Length: 457
Image 1 (cartoon, rainbow, N blue to C red):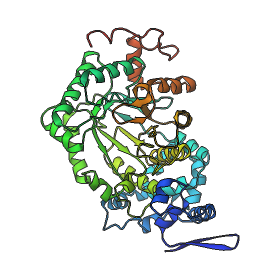
Image 2: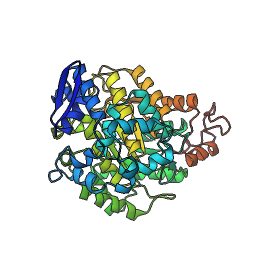
Image 3: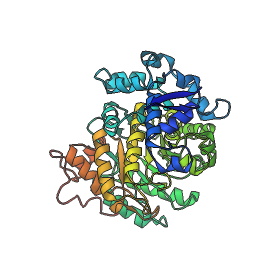
Image 4: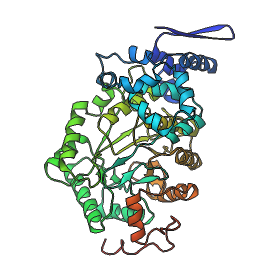
């Protein structure tokens, strides 16, 4: 089906829904690299005008990747909730945007329709929104998950304590963990990117985090971000695995490039549930995504990178994750060229994931060869905190010495919490107060953090 709009007497024609979505996307280098971006600003506006008039029902009738070709498409179509969709089924993409921004769209009503919104619908709406629209609607979305603490409550901002080390040295990692805990980081997860996927090395780190957590009764969860097959093997050996991690994408080809399938993720999900390690909930999965991962694997199937990203959220949602985050600027300037593109992409990802019902965090980051700097990250951190972002990263000094990219620090998380009056997860906050790390009255760290965590570490 072709889509058309006219500007100043010029008729613009878009031969498919996939083409229309790509041409309507705000400019980003990855879509230019893939040959999918609008050729001119006028063509982009024309595509957005045409997209605004597309009925939402069209997204159920015209798959951007054929149903028989792609298991992610099948997941989206087969899992669509017609009853939840009914209240907005008469709307166009532009009409859904207007409704989401209206007073009628409350937290409760958005939660009710969420199972009826497909990733492509969410992506379409985001392409019609200004940054403030993305922030305003995301702020109304509430997604709460639980394992050993409660993530995603209003007025809260959680952090992943990310103590990576270039050689997986346990002492270096332990030092970073203690540093982060003393600054109030780690309520989302203590999560290590291992330098290798060696099962023995991964197990060593898992035992170390678990010992620290048990010794100090820290109400949080651990994760070593190894490949899902490595983690399944460790679960079978009785290693203390809290969360199962995996990078995912929005096409079957992308996931195949990661060495995974929906059936493999289901196996991992069931294995993690069988351990029954959560104390207040059983959200046991942790997923990472990022615009450009499909294109970098030559697996984008002719779909723009933001729509591919939104489709990855359908994969994540199937497994009821505790945490999901987009590593927004990690892949590099070939996909998001500068700070402006990184900021826009992060706000889109956060909006789409929250609208679709995911506990979305953002790794606010960039690579050193991108046209971005820490001021851009400060801006993005502030915007996401205002938008109700579920969690961010806490990296020592904001400089990941293993992955060689720039992210956010323990101090950055403190800034966001203090300037906006946000608090850690409640169970973790109570632990911080008991340890003398946080002042329970002011929500500020004490002047002299407790020395108790340093003892015998």
